[in-house]
Image (cartoon, rainbow, N blue to C red; front, side, top):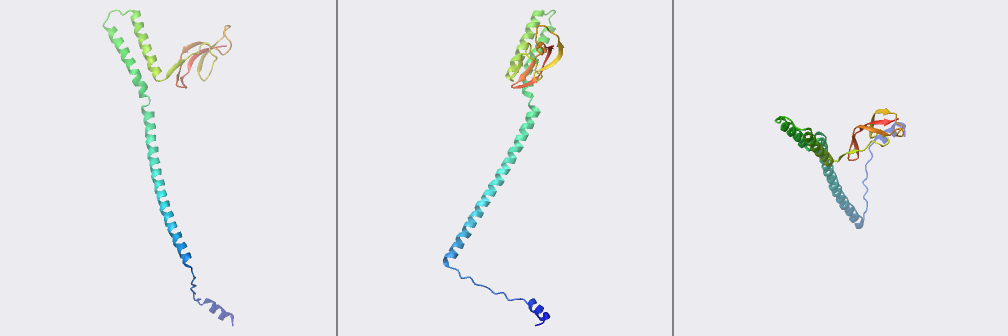
Length: 185
């Protein structure tokens, strides 16, 4: 046979033979059982996928809600402090208005009024968990104090707070205002 004839023969489509596989009745039952299990697994998968999508949507809604709450806290968080101090402003206005009509108001009366207002402010601050801290006699701590001056002192060791211009304040465990102090040299 020539090469040309071999090429033509190889180009001819080969007939497909269908092979019949002899199966046993048990094999068919196993196949049906596997198909049934596959269908059950697909249903279970679809149910889990649906649950996953629902949980994801719930989480997204929860996240968005919390973002809104945080935004509101930042926007209106100081309103509680302002509301707590408004009665103090009212007292100051009453004090000014009551002394306008009188010719002379004694210094003692004014001082009593100021002391009452100061006490009220202190109570309001305590309700907000704002407290002062002692500085005089303590070792200088840059986390608590701002040194405005340094003075030589024969009575105190070096770096001891010997005078306080303004009190320091804490809210819970955070310093919200450093004490303005004089430190020994």
